[in-house]
Length: 381
Image (cartoon, rainbow, N blue to C red; front, side, top):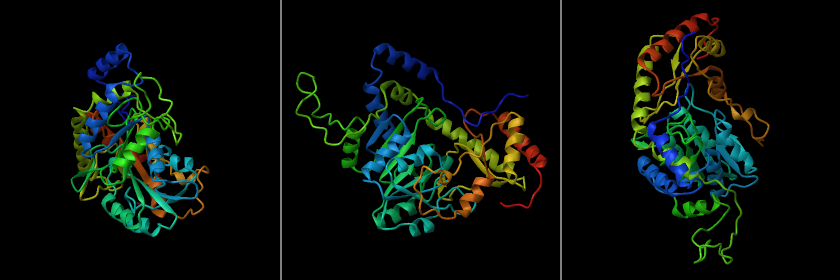
């Protein structure tokens, strides 16, 4: 078999190796100067303020829900075509997810259905920009403001994607990014919480480390101050200094990797347009994706996946809709026809910076073969 083409790549650079050794030798592994440095430079990169590094993206979303004062019985609007890393915090808050459908043949939440789903119990919304494809977050933000609903942008794989020439992550009351190994920045693990409001940011700083107020926690001897109270308990969610150093070392060249992904996507758009049985999932006209993967819809999707994997190319259906899981108190479950169609037909192709031109050509060639192998049925896309 030919060499495997991976769906995802993992950033690994000499700079990452060097900074790892430096931090290990320094002994400042759990905490140290790279945490605040990474936060500051990341905020500048996306053009937002108040960035707070966390140990993973799920804790960042959980923090955002706590800041939005989401508790048992509250409703959180979200989408089912996502991963548990994004939606599990709703269950952890004992809140109720309200699943909102997508617009037809896209990965974008439907703003009309979103507004219709709001009730007096709606406290917050989580909008996932699927695989780096912008959703209509400007329209969603306006709706949330109208109904006083806190908006959380899930940008976990959408770093430097834009809408109306503005980076995703700057529209909501809160936004989160992921630094899991297969993201645009690899910290081995980690997340970032962006808070629009300075009060929320200061509260989040305490909640991400046991509820401690670090402005009073130590006395003039550097010991724990017995007069420093902790009124609200929390857990430890801080990104450690080693992981922050890894992230900081990648900020200077992350744009070049993303631009390569965009170039690869343009190749696919041209090459796949010739295949009548492939429907390319579009990007909003006023948006720009960063193509964590390149998304298409095909009939007989699972057969196509099997044929592609047999040829050494890793493709995927990407997500399993979360409304299928019994851990959610989804008492208001409704039919989601567009989500259902997407779940049955979506195919994620490798599109990242690690792919050569030969790799791209091979993906298209093998996809063409796989479509011929798959049993013909009446088209659903």
